[in-house]
Length: 317
Picture 1: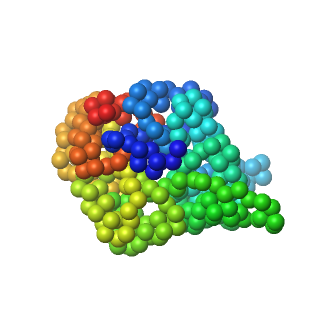
Picture 2 (picture 1 turned 90 degrees about the horizontal axis):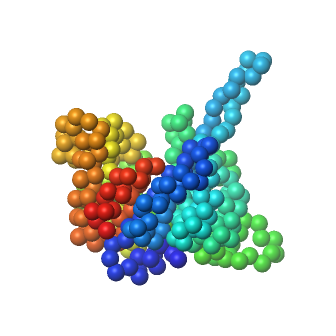
Picture 3 (picture 1 turned 120 degrees about the vertical axis):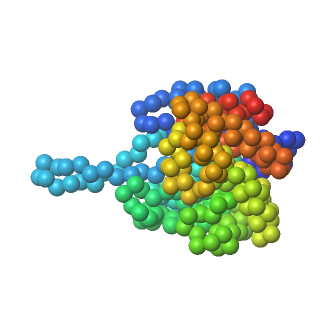
């Protein structure tokens, strides 16, 4: 079922979460161990992230360095298939620009459609660690809007190389990312909303936001979207702070603001357990406020650790 259909049919705010594929070498059981305790809260869909390849340099016998591409985590398609088979819930794979040509993207979409996967979340993806800016793969997409158009084209039966073949249209429900505190590369919120509106016009049916810690940011973002002609469901993305280092890392990586009340409470903590309690309590309060504000789904970023999300879900759902 499509994400928008789950939302339309729901009589209350839904619970969902995002999975980070395990590091290479770990088996599928590590995924199941994360999911199992959260299934009692009946998530209608589960997101599965994807990380582009990176490069390492290996020294050859002649002293020259050889650049070698590598991936730290298994592919999203196989994980989605396993989740759907074991739990009978919808999986939402992340589809990214980086690391794929347009042909490879089309092949991946054909596989997803074959498996009965109805939803995709379309993202540009991050730059590689050694690159200050995003560099697209040769023959690939540079922007999420380009990738979104390719998915929309397939939904209309338009493939890259038809040449007289009968092409079956796909039927993906397409999600995109939204940024209540503005994408870090956008010069201002107005410009950011212009590009978001373009994605909706191209076929995006729902939006999942970047994490935030002040509900007013989400409320204002939804109001701005509606004022700019964006009327698709907007799902808030949420994460509990579980360590003091995250006070530095989260704003640095995601370009977000952490309220002073939260940062001061965390800085006063003596132990990691104290930090987790503050982070979880904050997100429980935040989740209750978002339900009151009419959020269609509360979507939690587990980051490979289900325990904080489990504590929050027990208090909310």
